[in-house]
Amino acid sequence: MEYITEKQLFLLLCLGLSLAGGCVKQKSSGELPQKQGIILGFSQIGAESAWRTCHTRSVKEAAAQAGVQLLFSNAEQKQENQIRAIRSFIAYQVDVIAFVPIVSGGWDNVLMEARDAGIPVLVTDRKIDSDEGLYAGFIGTDSIAEGRNAGLFLLEKFKEPLERGGPIRIVELSGTVGSSAATGRAEGFREVLAPYPQFQIVHSASGDFLRSKGYELMQSILASYSNIDVIFSHNDGMTLGVLDAVKEASLKPGTDMAIVTVDAEQAVINALIRGEVNCVIECNPKQGPGIIRLAQTLARGESISRLIHVDETVFYEWDDLSALPPRGY
Ligand code: AHR
Image (tube, rainbow, N blue to C red; front, side, top):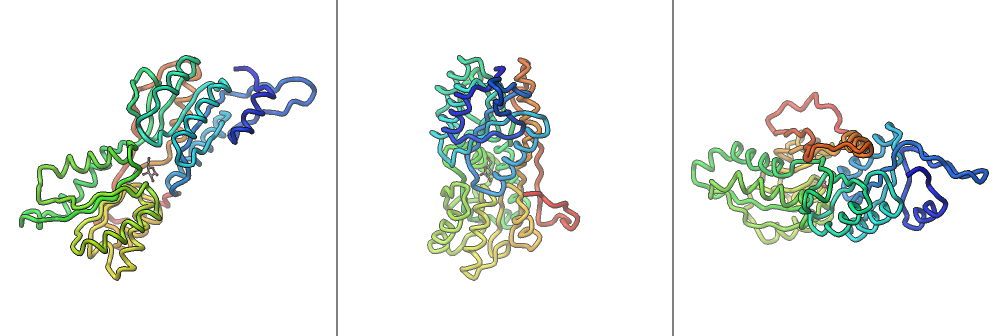
C-alpha cells in the first residue's frame, strides 16, 4: 500500500485505533501523504497485568526504533474486539498483521479473510489452534515448558515428603480459560507430576490472569481448605492477589504453603527475595524486537520460521538474587 487516504484515516479514528512508531503526515496541499516504511496492524488483548503493559511497550518501542508504522488496537480482553481490529487492518490494507490471541480457538474465518487479502499474519505471545496454512508463523512464550518447570521445582522442593509418600496438596489458579498460556502451563505441570500420585491437585480454578480474581479466589479457597501445601499460580498478577489474601488470613506465604508463579514481574521477584514466594518462572514479555524483525521479513515477501520461542529462565528460592538487574516490569 502506497498511501493512507483521508477515508482510511477516518476509518482509523472511528475504530479507535492508535498510530505509533512512525508518522503519517497530514495532507497539506492536496497531496496524499506518502507512507514511511511498512505498516503493521497489531491487536493486543488488553492491559491486564504489568507483564502485558511491558509487552505492549516492547512492541511500540521496537516499532518506533525500526521506523515501522504501528496501528495499535487494545481489545480490552474481548476476542470480538480483536476480530474487529483485524478486519479493520485488512480494510486498511496494512502490510502485515500481528496479534496476541486471547484464546486459541475461533480465528479461522478472519485469518482466511487476511489470507484472501494477501496480508501475512504473525501470531505472537500465545498460540492458536488454526491450521498452519492460515498464518505465517509464531513468536512467543513456551507455556508448556513453563508448566514443566513449575512441576520440576516441586519435585526438588518436596523430595522428602515425596519419599514419605505425601500427600502434597496443590491448588492451581489458572489463567484465562481457552488461552494457550493457561492450557500449556496446566499441561506441562501435570505431565511432570503425573508419575507421582503423591502430588494431588485438590482444586483448580481460573483467575483470568487478574490480581483481583486471584485475591477473591484465594479468599474462598482458604475458607474451604485448611491444609494446602502448594499454590501454583499461572501468573504474577494473580499471585499478588494470593499474597494479599494469605497474609490477611494470618498465614505466611512461602512458609505455610509454597508458592510457584509465572512471569517474573519485579514485585514478585521482590516477594521471592523476602521468602514469600518460592519459585518464579520467567515468561518473557520483551518480544517487540523479534516481532518487528519478523514483520519486516514478511513485508519483504520472505518466509519466516514457523515457531520461535523467546528465551526464558527460572528463579528459585535457593538462588543468590542479590545482584539481579531490575526486571523492567
Ligand atoms: O500470555 C502471557 C500471559 O498473559 C502472562 O503470563 C500474563 O501475565 C498475561 O496476562
